[in-house]
Image (cartoon, rainbow, N blue to C red; front, side, top):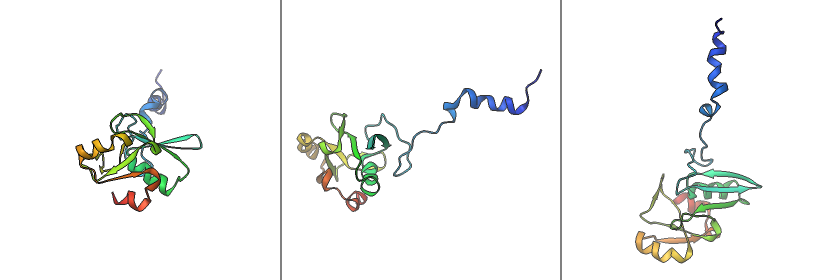
Length: 137
C-alpha cells in the first residue's frame, strides 16, 4: 500500500516542529536574539519577557514603546543578569557590540577601570538616558 503524496510530504511537519520554528528576533532591529550572548538584554512588562540582541536595542524599545518595563542587562565585567538600574551605561569606548557602538553596562564600582581600559567618554545611569541620546550612539 502506498500513502498519498500529501501525507508523505506532511510527515516532517508533524514529527519535526522544531525545525519549522524560526529563532527569536529583536523587537527593535530584527536581528536574531542569542540568549547566551554577552550583549543579551531583556525587558519585562507585566510578567512577559522580551529579549533583545543588545542593551541599546532594549533601551530604544523601552524609551519608545514600553516605558514601564523593567530592563535587564548583562554587566560587562561580571557577566551577570542585573537590573539596568544597577549599572552605568558607558559610551564612546573601544568596546563594540554585535551591531557596532553600543551602551556598555558596567557596574558603578568598576566604571574607573572600564574608562581606563577602554577609553570610555561618558557614563549614564538609566534614568538619564533619553531616546535621542540612545539613537545617537
